[in-house]
Image 1 (cartoon, rainbow, N blue to C red):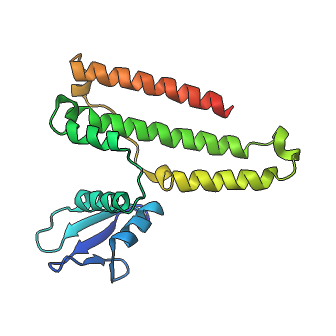
Image 2: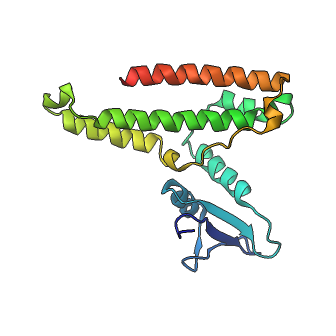
Length: 188
């Protein structure tokens, strides 16, 4: 496994300080967020117990960004997430979110590809290249790091049965596919 392919190991000491094992220095949550935005996978473990704390720290990073006014998650989405922890939707939500972000990554790739296609009839318009660079920078900023997220794994046999959550998931996927199709038509 190459150095960049294996997760960056961060150890949490009893003092709650986070230690980057590759560079042998202490890091902050902002540093960890920067590693992730740069496309690096990160694993955070408790030095003493060996417990994996990655999920806890990633949620903390998201919470800090949201509290600073860098909101990405609308209030109704946050409310629905809270509700999903106490409902039957709990089993469907992770798959739905993974499929949604996969579709978003694919749309971003197609949009970036369409922006860079040659020949472009707009290429002769004065200032077009500058505008195209600004659009690409905007998209990269808006979608920062999404191209490096892991793809969702294939559904297991349980999710293929004909239970209500499985049918709901199939319907959601169908709707996502329709949205994907509409987005790709807009890009053409």
